[in-house]
Structures are given as structure tokens and as C-alpha cells.
Image (tube, rainbow, N blue to C red; front, side, top):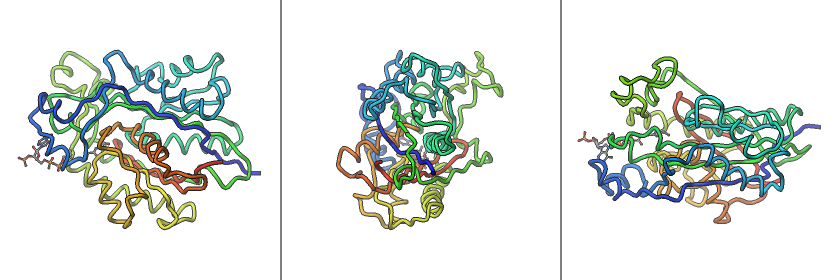
Length: 330
Ligand code: UT7
């Protein structure tokens, strides 16, 4: 009998504080019209100073566990995809375990830029298929406001904070669940999107802070060019791997980095608006948070049904890109 990982629960969280484009006009030399036409973003949610990635991950996870009808003690493993862990170590996954479960549960952080959640779903799915794990909590959580330079207009307008969580569970001989995925990384493009200081390459010092190297740096134009190629490639190749085509796809849930990047994919595949999940307008780019937020909104709008073929696709720092294909329900 073969096992497959089905989605038993989905939960999301975005902090209550909203930073809209007009608020940003007071921080940097920008304007609402530029931000909306170039990115599609109108507002983003920003965590409170004391609110951490683990705090947001916990809130999303509790909702996912509740929907799955289980508690943290029922989990076999936790994977937290994040680029902004509470600390480099201990891991955010270990912090989350302590909050969700009374007994030890395996856990690890995974860092793959904004593609992290796609990677985490595939790894959890493979662990479940192996038969060694039955229930895995997969979380995507990022507090990008903690690494955003609010004096740099080219990045300050893009990012927000959020978390999303999925409970994956092994079911035997089912047509539902994670069907397969396509994952790629190419480090030659690593400098396009990076956090230069704070690692072993450039340990944090007064000089790195002085130069602002503890903030995210991005070559927006080159990243854009990469993204408009990577997203369609990942959609097509992911579907091909599981024997499906774009026509079989009921809902595309793309990483929400820029509405123009999403629109390029929509045009390429000639998709009707009801087959694409878009909510970048209200959240901006929350890195690994964008896909669960968009998926949850689509679900609330009644666009995800039992049996729906849902394609999650992302790109990000690394460079990384990839997709995962899920037949929704169980
Ligand atoms: O998940 C993370 C992945 N990151 C991304 O996906 C980002 C991908 N890249 C992008 O989304 C776009 O490249 C940006 C939104 C970052 C920039 O948009 P763009 O259309 O590529 O603009 P640009 O960088 O070519 O800049 C055009 C102009 C420049 O002025 P000049 O040189 O033409 O006078 C910029 O200085 O817009 C200016 N500009 C701004 N103006 C007002 C750049 N940022 C701003 C701003 N407000 N915030």
C-alpha cells in the first residue's frame, strides 16, 4: 500500500497592524500610485516589535491543528520554513514544539527563500510516503519587517509579516493529497536577493550595522526577470511530473511578490481570474506566508473544493523556485 500526504488542516495569521501606502509616503520618497501600478500592493501587515516569527507561527499552527482535529502531541514532526527565525539557533521549530506539545517532537527549520514552504511540503510529503512519519506540521512564517530597511524605498514598499501552517497526514491508497513537486535552486543568482551580514561570511559588527548590511538587499529588476521565467517553468514542469497539464489545474496559488509577475503567468497560461488566487493588494510580499494566505482566502471564497487540483508555485532567494501539486481534500 502506498501512502500519500493529505492536507488535514490549514491556518493563517497576519498581525493586526496595517501599514498602507500612504503611511509609507511619510517614511520614504514614494507614492501610492507608483506602488499600486508597479507592484499591486496597497497595504501590508506588520508585526509588533516584540512579536516574533515563532509567535506568528504558533497562531497559524493552532488553527491548522484545530481544523485537523489533533493536538501538538499527535504530531511526529515539525518543519518551519523561514528566512527570519527568532534566532539562528535554537530553531524556530524547536521553539514551536515547546509551545504546541507536551512531549518532544522532531523539528527543523528550512531556509529556501520565498520557496521555503514549497520545499517543506515536499519534504514532509516524502517523509510521510516513506512510512516513518504520519502527521507533520508544515509552517511558513516570516517577519520580514525585522530585516527591511524603511529608508530604502525600493524594498520598504514590498514586504509584510505573516504565517501559515498546514497539517499533513498519511492516508493509504488515496487519490487526494500531495501529488508531486518540482524544486530547483541555482546559487549563481544568490546575490540578487540576500541578507549580507549576520552569518559566518560577515558576522554582525558595528561596521555591518553602520552600513545597513543587516537589512535585506535586492536587485529588483533582475529578480523580476528571473521570476517571470521561473514561475511558468515550475508550473509546467510540476504538472508534467504528476501527469497533468495546465488544463487540469483548478487553482493556481502563486507566490505574491508583484502583481505584474503573477499577471505574466496568468497571460502565459491564458487563465480566467477565478483560477488564480491573488491577495497581494492586502498583504504585500510576506515571503513563505504568501501562499497559505492566498490559499486560505481562495478557500473562504469557495474556490477550493474536494478534488480540486491546486498548484502552489514560488520563487525566491537562493535563487530557488518550485511548485507542488495537491489534489485537495481527503
Ligand atoms: O519574494 C522576493 C522576490 N522579490 C521580487 O519579486 C521583486 C521583483 N522585482 C520587482 O517587483 C520590481 O522590480 C520592483 C517593484 C522592485 C521595482 O519595480 P520596477 O518597475 O522594476 O522599477 P525600477 O526598479 O525599474 O525603477 C523604476 C523607477 C526608478 O526611477 P528612475 O531611475 O526611472 O528615475 C526608481 O528609482 O522607479 C523608482 N522607484 C520608486 N519610485 C517611487 C523605485 N522604487 C520606488 C518607490 N517609489 N518605492
